Length: 155
Image (cartoon, rainbow, N blue to C red; front, side, top):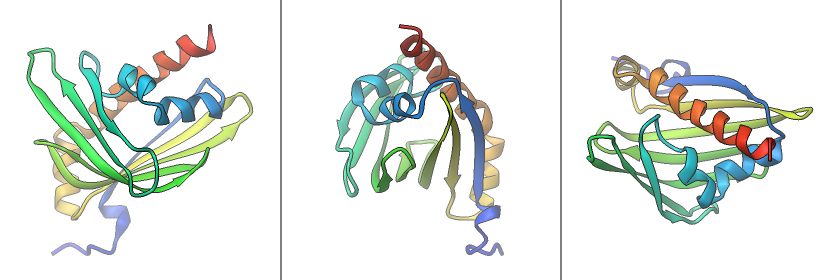
């Protein structure tokens, strides 16, 4: 039986440094017109259905896969500290449900250090998500974000 209190065994984390100022990275995460351009793995189209960016606010995106299948990703913002962190519940149905996503931003000159974690209900569920391709999927998403930020920075 797993210890539900041991976060380290229930959390998957990625760290990255984006070649863009924190203000731009924050805007990419918080403005619906930007989110639609990078959210989701390569080859997916994202539509922002709802985006109430405040603590207690709901977000809901529709993601269409290359084969035309659509799925919904949604959650509720729990903590928002401008230019520092965004914590939200999240469901990526039917693949992942009942997780918490944590995005941390730290200014690093004209770059942004970024840490992204997903906290799962149990250690077993965390392992299952990792085996299903957690890292490949989210690295693809953040590659999209990096490309999007490059377009903005180079304007």
